[in-house]
Amino acid sequence: MDSLSAIRIVLIDTTHPGNIGATARAMKVMGLKQLVLVRPRHFPDATATAMASGAADLLTDAIVVDSLDDAIADCRLVLGTSARPRSLEWPMLASREAAVHLHQVVQAGQSAAQTAILFGTESVGLSNEQLQRCQYRIEIPANPDYSSLNLAQAVQVISYELRQAFLTEQKPDQPPQSHASHALADDRSVESFLERFHQMIVELDILNPAQPKMLMQRIRRLFMRARLETSEVSILQGIISAVLAGQHRDK
Amino acid sequence: MDSLSAIRIVLIDTTHPGNIGATARAMKVMGLKQLVLVRPRHFPDATATAMASGAADLLTDAIVVDSLDDAIADCRLVLGTSARPRSLEWPMLASREAAVHLHQVVQAGQSAAQTAILFGTESVGLSNEQLQRCQYRIEIPANPDYSSLNLAQAVQVISYELRQAFLTEQKPDQPPQSHASHALADDRSVESFLERFHQMIVELDILNPAQPKMLMQRIRRLFMRARLETSEVSILQGIISAVLAGQHRDK
Image (cartoon, rainbow over all chains, first blue to last red; front, side, top):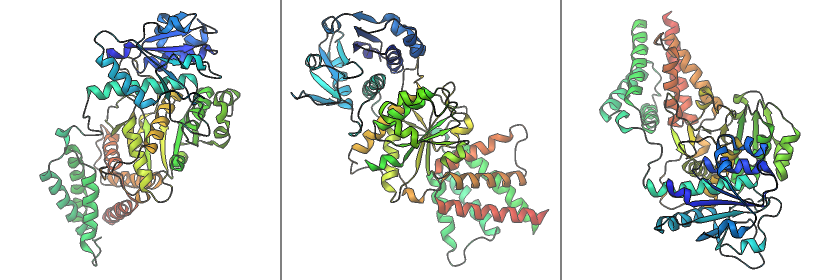
């Protein structure tokens, strides 16, 4: 995940130091490192350090500059986050597409391709001039009635998408939610379990004489869907044995 | 995007009211509305309101309860966010898959299928007992060296993924793994079933005195994974009743 370190997060004219700290944390949990602050109002600051939690090292390493020029001079791709379209429409990428695109650019670059993502001041975001330093505007799809993400939240979402884009490349086919397959019960033991389950409900005398097969069909479907593991079959078999023992004592 | 309102965000034992406010904002920008607070330490609170920014209405509408039972009794699918695997592994979905899955469940249900996502206390997250009320654990892929997202940031990422899932057109070759969600048993009836199951195995005298809780944990995990339907719970309750009747005759 080293290539995430080629991505620079740039905060411009940040008013609240808490947002800078929360940004550092949002970055670090997703594996980003480079933080550049253009004219932060209060920095360094105890509130920033507190909000950074375990990411205070990113604050220590953060570079503070006076102008956006200094922040992005070496960058080959600059994206600016902005909720609102501008009077002059700017090429736009949604957050997910932007992350995928950034990933492609970084992968393609032989040397570390510096890329930057800009975030403007809390109240009004990026100015037109600042946005025009970007190849793309990034839009985070949001509620049209209320689309104003907190600054650090926007950093979190973008950082998360970046990690997803970089992860997806490395693990093409992660099957979701799979058991370790050695743990799954084999067909033979599942069938054996279902036979004994059937035996149990016959002895418990709870079958519907009009539709005797329906109950076991539903039971079967339930347990098939559960993808039983060998240990679970053992447990269930033990319960059935206890029930049958009780029934046999009774008769 | 109305169906996003079928999704309930549940914060349990939240320490810092600022996180509650930031959560409300994170939700509203993504179109979510339902917020339930289980034993918030300080609420209502001026800090929460301030951090909520334009989402103070979600705080006003938030429901405060004493127990997790009350927060999710009517929910048919409950997911819990947790960074760390547990000693007894619980079915896991990464954040993106979880959002896609929730979307499918909500789409499949004709009436509003209540689903909930649980977030634990800031310091340690969800307890084992709380996680075991969930069909799935959600994991947000993060930096293995530092994976501790701020609570409201985790809500932001999940909410963002939910909006993304609801925005994305459902692909025609979507694997049919979801139930019609109106058929899913709600938390209240699943808990009632598991209590009676426990009662049954106590009376069958098959608990391991050295590890009395282990068997029910595994049983619980099995049935959570099975995603029980209301008809199946009825069937299983009927079987338990017959077993208990047999046991009581025996004594």
